[in-house]
Image (cartoon, rainbow, N blue to C red; front, side, top):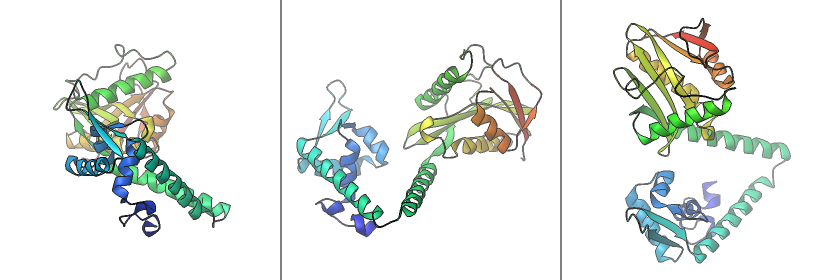
Length: 280
């Protein structure tokens, strides 16, 4: 396949440029792209991306402009010639896809498409990183606000942050607790938190996964990492509560071995309380 599309040659899609340059053209898109966002999206170091952009500029395909208000911000845009080149690459990609699918039967096409989608999901899942974050960091704040926004949309009577059991910045900072943030290509896509209570079970809070990456197993991964962190900090059990409308979360907790128990707090938005014994 790499031979067929020219990924290993200097003439990707039979054009006069390699795959790396073609990918940059595609990612810049029709409306342009901030260079920092481009670097993050492609996971390239700044030096290599600068070289690629310089080549494309010299070929008359790209223009890089500095922001008039902030010289540190640069935006890459396709020229008229660059837009034509991108259109040619798009058309040749479509033609190549058709040439691959045409010889196959309908069932074979369906199997191939399903297999490619599964490979894509697994590759994306493998690039997500999870680590302890400062609750004051912009990525952490984004995840927590997204969590509150989703609860507000899904709960029967909305969600009032002031009414729920607290999980403040201090409570989510070691040694009182911690916050995990998941990132994909340097963008925040999920979070989960712990509150420690000395000899009592630890408490899981603020579990959220971005809709953009659901179905990749990230919720289970975050929960597993919370369990590991809780055990590493001396907790013998992990507790959590959830709302009846969060059916996916309830299914996740039950599948992960959590047992429903009587209410252990007075969380006003909870309908189910769960607990799991941990192995230290």
